[in-house]
Length: 367
Image 1 (cartoon, rainbow, N blue to C red):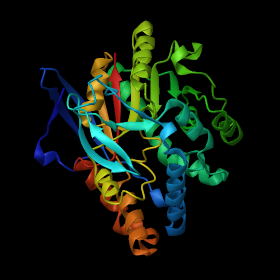
Image 2 (image 1 turned 180 degrees about the horizontal axis):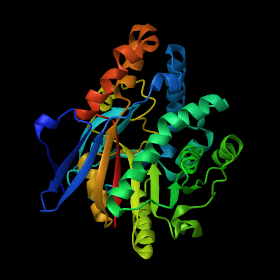
Image 3 (image 1 turned 135 degrees about the vertical axis):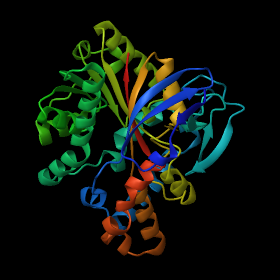
């Protein structure tokens, strides 16, 4: 269940390359790999020292509120392979919750997490994760900078695998509708499934996009002839994410062809090392109230294979240098890390990505 990447070291820091991924059971796949994503994260996020401190304080307050005994459950089995958790090795703790590594499939997850009921309450009340920009101009900048490149990559992957344009997209866990809006703006027939009513209302008000407030596991009618089903930064939140992948495979198999595209946080990243160092002020990536699991290259491949998918491509990019700037600014109480990040930090992110240390990965898979 361990995967190896066959890489020519001369190709490190390249923007695109072919890689052969193989595991210890003799399974191998050739993947089309892309590295890097040009985004002015500070321009988009408008993050400065006082705001970052506020975000950290809010996350600490949420942990104090929710991390009480009656809200916590033990995770007895790995969420990817079902391996018993008893003999899994501890990695480290964030805000008092411990990440462990599955000794079978190399998935990282919290050995104790919020119960399903507590998770529901957390997402209902959390102002850190649900807060969104309400300025129309800033929202359009964010959508064009972050979501439009994802739509374009998804189209390229589908055309590369199937030789034609996709027609219908379903985005699961659509949030505030950014991706759906960007996909429609590029001429795609795109629908979003989002059970959270405030997000549905926001999408309607900001983008004039009507999301579908249904449970994906019931297989809403809108999914049944989709060419592509996407999960953008969703699976890390779901205790039963393998069930979502299984349902996706069933929908696409019934159609006869199709693609799964998913984005997940990546364990083996500079960001993981930064946040494990400053583990008392984590507000994203390893924030344990919401990210109950973080994927390794091996564990996401195992999840795809176990659900019948054929991995075709991957895209690695991240916010590692953004995180470093925020943490150093906080540590030194110096605004310079926020005022001039493009010159000193963000220009290094493509090197981090190409050097296999990015904190985000997106996979495309066929059936």
